[in-house]
Length: 171
Image 1 (tube, rainbow, N blue to C red):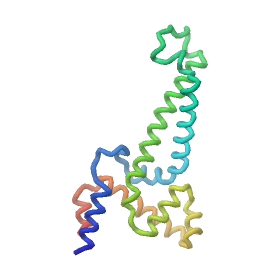
Image 2 (cartoon, rainbow, N blue to C red; image 1 turned 90 degrees about the vertical axis):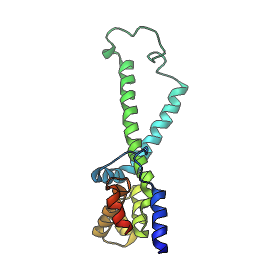
Image 3 (cartoon, one colour; image 1 turned 120 degrees about the vertical axis):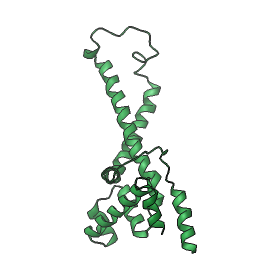
Image 4 (cartoon, helix red, strand yellow; image 1 turned 180 degrees about the vertical axis):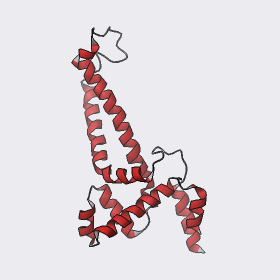
């Protein structure tokens, strides 16, 4: 009937391709990403701001790849060189955080129930299960169950369940 058509339309809108920026995640990783989303996005913003300031007063000029200058002897004992290494590791870490955040962002629209969506928004805003429970007037157990449904929905939508699993849902 009409509902089936609407479902399929939304289903394709949410997409099921593996070529997304966020890549693949298991349920445990999705659950952790939902919990950590709020601070991760803030940390990405903070690092980006620092990077913008960094470009203005470049510390990397001395040690950048463009620099043909020979590095000082005993580079490991050189604090500036060590700082460069630290920032490189930080950059790799931020890329990992961005992948997690992107995964969540790419699958937000597939969470369809009103309660599910409300819980999802609260989680992404950094609220705890207890806080969400008080806010919505539902038990903590209920909020945890809704959160588990959100994780399942995102997991299945990311193509992890395969088309057979999704076909069953579509009926």
